[in-house]
Image (tube, rainbow, N blue to C red; front, side):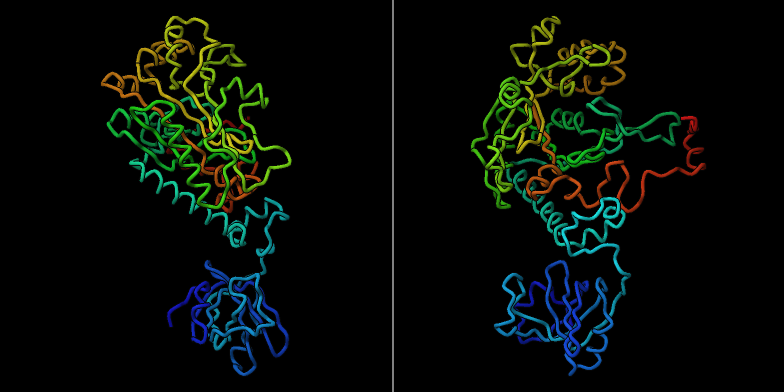
Length: 465
């Protein structure tokens, strides 16, 4: 008999069906044995009666988290036993036969609770069990829905989804790179991308006017509740546009996604603050506009922050460096001062952030499309012409073959889903996250490399550190 999803049982009253899944709980009342069975679609109460002797005896041996298949008859529950809090609360399955597919050891924790009372170390060690709990199932399915909505919106707006490389060249994006040694070119290293920044700009030069991808990005920076070593961003770039075109596009995306999953937007259109105004009014460039007593988690208060400083002084070296990334374009009225190296601390970029409920949700900007301006930025940062050529010669050369004006943004998918799910940190909406010490779920990485691997890569470890 074909397996029936548990969510469809209400349509099968009076019929004989076969279902399969995990045993959620067993309640033995002597003559009557009740078993709740769950699959990915839902949960149902089953009853083993003495009249079905073999099934009744086997039901008495079953334990939580066993994987079983059950054939039975779908019956209406007596009115006084209806559970209105459950989707299948008005039916139960009369067990006719049971097949044990796989037994299970007693789990190290209860997978039926929300799990927040359990230590993170245990939850991540047994993440495959942790993901069985209803809250985590709901979060991961919400993430899937959000990515589906994103693709719907972007495709409807004539964007092309294009993947960019994971092995690339080291590039300053504001954090340390993760390096990958090359076996074929000993002594040289790839870098994992902190962002697809240069590739998406090259795509604009290639004639793809609207690009996006759900991009994996890796940054070796300190971990916290809203940041992991690896994250996913909704990376997008547009040619022949101005700043406001990008803001309108992303604003429409956020409204579409948030309202599609039942959220309410605090204000539409989103309020706009200059960086200076935001710091003056809220004390920071990421903030929560909702009054303290009205911070309902189902309300999302989006706002734009614009006109960021173009450059800032490095706290360690005292040299000028980029405030966001070295490809952000100065405001048009500030280009001349930049080219003359004047008043650098007061220059502003066509740079913008999206904030929501106290979090920075996205960052983006209009890009430099003039190679002379780009070279000047690197010069101000202290790079020699030789260093500029070595690190960025490829993209500057590409610009010399014609570059359309372009701009983009990269909303963080993990933070967005975290807010939509009303969760306290992004680890609750990532299937296999790292803990606060940078150790992966289940597989215990990082781990030591075998001596043969290191030898093949030409690497010798300094064990004195």
